[in-house]
Image 1: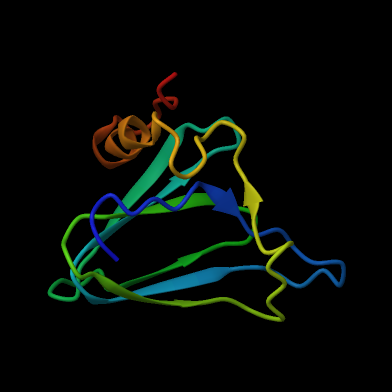
Image 2: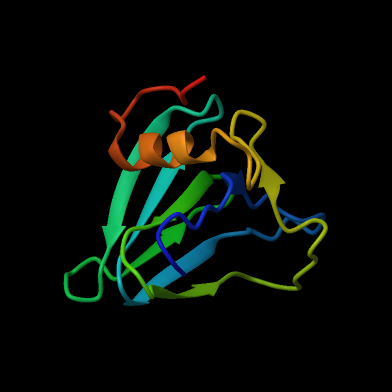
Length: 123
């Protein structure tokens, strides 16, 4: 992954069987910022993952709005979540966040990397 890679904020909701839909990220190379949001889009937490620090992994709880920003070239992350993988039902995207390749995406990425915790997304 490269800087400016955008993962639209989303959450993984429990399936019909009630299985929890957590997600695990492990940084292998480079650096990534993982952020969580509340249901309105307010920044809740920001975690910097770097294999040269103590912060090499994060588990995102079920139903937690989250996203990832890449801050170094050639970043490699391992991602795991419970299956089965159903691409059309895997993610619930946030309506308060821009879609990939929209013009305001760069402003949004900059906000969740540098914005004040507790702030709302830029309009």
